[in-house]
Length: 205
Image 1: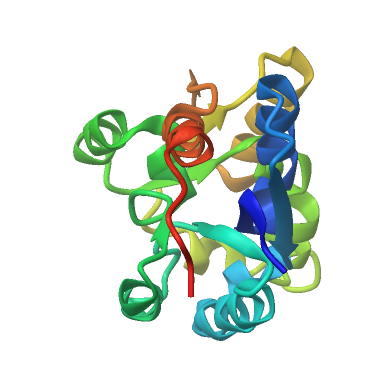
Image 2: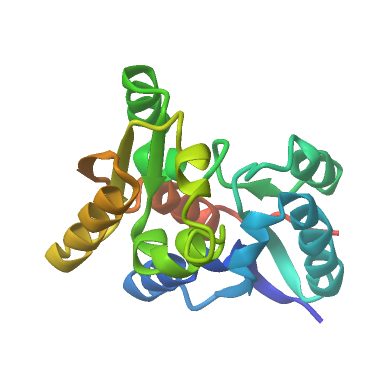
């Protein structure tokens, strides 16, 4: 049975820390968070199916559902799922864009197309996701091939943490890339979640 005004955010596990922080800071007690595995980003073809499964499970228990994913490499399939459901998702093509905001991200992309982006989450887990995830620890010879078209690493930070900045700088050095740090805060993640958490209830399902 639905609780009036209740909201479920179905989100990428890579955003769990940031969404939980915003929920706590804003006192969104009517908002629940269900995170899917962060490693789905390595298999974007599986994201839409995983999101649909969670929507089907939750639709009878919440007034509204919101998707804490951008397109994230689904090639429009996530939007094709959500449109008939009348369910919104985070703006943009991926988390780098909504953290930076579209304007800043487009400026960065125009300045250097060959840019690798890190967020707080990706910086904390750089070795596991990038080095081990792509097998660079076992096959270091493929690093040159994989990053041949990259020139710069831009760290988009959500929190101010000198230790994380240094980790990101070392990641850039590890890959032989120029380093740039931009503090973005939560960007459009915060504004989008604030909008969904405070708007008038809209029935789901």
